[in-house]
View 1 (cartoon, helix red, strand yellow):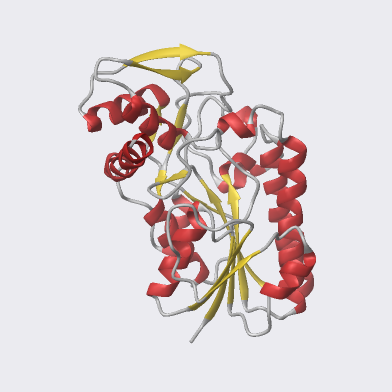
View 2 (spheres, rainbow, N blue to C red):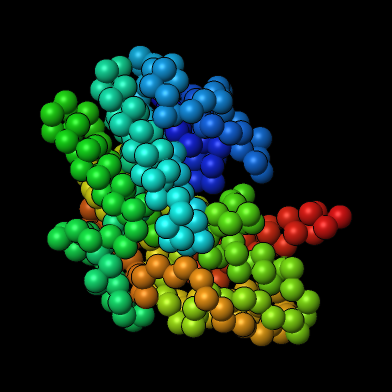
Length: 322
């Protein structure tokens, strides 16, 4: 039986990965600073621990691990990342998690390690057009991310590849593009745009209004969680290190995302535009490389994923009001 460690298992993507690996027959250990908020995970072992602490990492990265999945990070949506108020914590906390994990993986001779990077590593200067044609992996340099979150992700990409070159550990890196779906953060300030839109529409009366930051014409692509997990597993089973985009190339404006959710909810909703943190003007995944290297790319429609996500968040809103 293969043995895997999922770092950040108490979070959105990590929790889904635990379930996928168990379904495939792995023995799975999860570790996180908190338990999963929405699901009882089927992990064989779950350690409540802080990956910033090297003693915890030494405990959970034991001899005999075949695979490590490193999702743990200090992160959130635009309201958290682009406010500027959390930059030091984001860089310090996430870098420590990565430094400790890859160092211990080499010391314990782990089989291979996956690192979850982000589309936020791409230069701000090539994301000023809402009709962004797509970000190719080679466009990461010359580097100029739009946030300290992006800079930390880019640093950690380079660190993992340096450990690969210097110590021989097998490394796989993916740049995620806005992953969403059920059992993720949907309120509290760290939620991302799809969850925020679902919550706002679920809470609004029919004929009411919801707030949109900026003019709402900024664009993004969003990837449903099941396809993210599938892409990661295919990457880990391949001989390709990456970095590679794992994201949808179906781009949509924030205004149209809100309208899509209102249509799913069968509500008439007015949009009220207010000031707020925005990030780049246009961001989209370009999937030529993943098709070339893995013979696969995400294909599920945004609408399909949003229908499932809205149903789950609507249920959470109802439960919170009960």
